[in-house]
Length: 116
Image 1 (tube, rainbow, N blue to C red):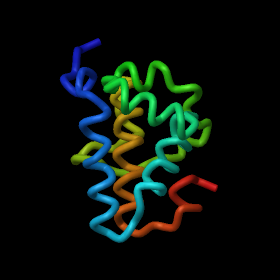
Image 2: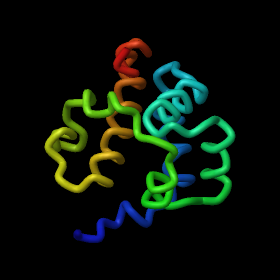
Image 3: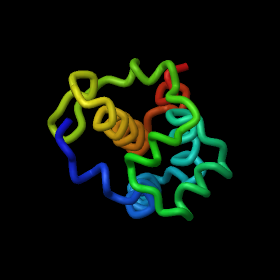
């Protein structure tokens, strides 16, 4: 498996960028947290612990309680790549997260973002 630079990137460094992106479009930090918790299975306390520990993306997803079974329903393009076509499982999880934050920032209804 190729070692992508994103694996070592600290989630705590990217998280504020997710929040900024959402807030620029009148969404909230709470909504960003909600989509992250939906995808990963973290509790709010668990999510905050990962941020405080400055976990990298590899650790963040490795320690996630459970990837949401509906994550496979996340489709579309992020950075010119179809998320459902990504071969590497960790890269795909990161792209899922990117796609959810993109949908949030684009004003999509939370029920649709969370595939309910």
